[in-house]
Length: 473
Image 1 (cartoon, one colour):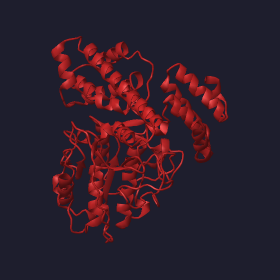
Image 2 (cartoon, rainbow, N blue to C red):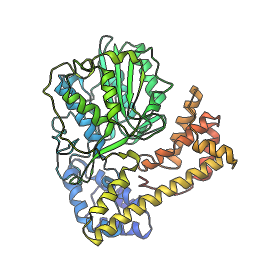
Image 3 (spheres, rainbow, N blue to C red):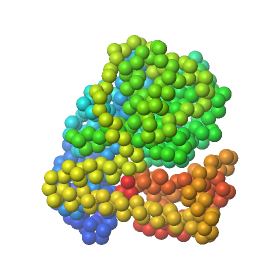
Image 4 (spheres, helix red, strand yellow):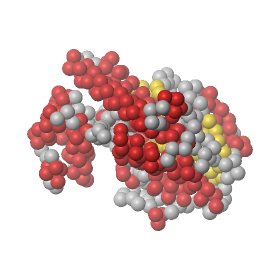
């Protein structure tokens, strides 16, 4: 396999099939997925032509062996649909493209699973939101470092291989609006291959304030535990106002199941604020009113607000554009909301209910069983980690597993950042196993209760001795 990976060629389908069968004989699902990822990378600039051909040719083997493609494991339609829709909200209200920076992985529109190539929608029977969206940062250029440097206007520090390399060139008289959507966990939000910590985001906000890079700054954040990005961190004296899809301890929710696309089209908090902005006169609506509307409509989680709440009296048009726009009213449809952490299984269960053949049902059940087995393995590993870190003391273990203790000091935040980094390296790659993000409260609690980074790292060394896994979704 190493020799095959080292060759500067795309292997023909019969070789790919043989390699996949070898992975299956070894029961090494992770190796099979990494092999497919490497093939996609080898396709280079012809990836949209060659990779779909390869997958189509090996599809019967994938089905027979119960192996998912990387796209099937990470088909995150709704977040990119949210991002594309948000661009159109600003664009339709007169914000020029040179003042909008868009970051998204951009692997959905022409994904082999998308039955409408080049078209993305954010609501049932909705219009295409992909058309016209700038590709400022895509793929592996969507990183926390680039995101923060875009905010800071530091074009000199941008590390990007493609796209516009555009940054926010704001000054002391400007209003800045930031919308973010992805997965989350206590004290962090996810990027495709990395995470952004709450402390680092708030340090960047202080940098922007010190360097007079805005007059007023507004954040809308869609992610599980998104309230933890600002709670006890965002000062009310910085002219910054933030709203989040959830509080510090709960999931956000996906919505709008689409039978044809076999996925969820949006996220509830995001859909609610964007549909409100689409249809309302933003010159008449305040941020506070939009917050109340979104909070009422998003009844599956606790939508929160942070920072300088006096900014809520400002008009939405001060941040999302002042140009009058023709109202857009989304077609009526049930939200069919589902906990974001359960989306992968919810999708498979809907597919199972709609499956027409025994072979299809068998394959889907195999995928469900695989995810559930990997989730159980994550659960067992984290329980062992808590036991090791607390020396088996039952009360202490219960505290770190079930409690919710905030990080108070800079040392606590450094401990958490170091511990999550080592967890990603030693235990579970979060980008390949997003279910493991739901277990990071353990590490936060350990740091908040005074455990040192070294002791937490020692516990991980003792417990996380398994081979890498992929697909704990």
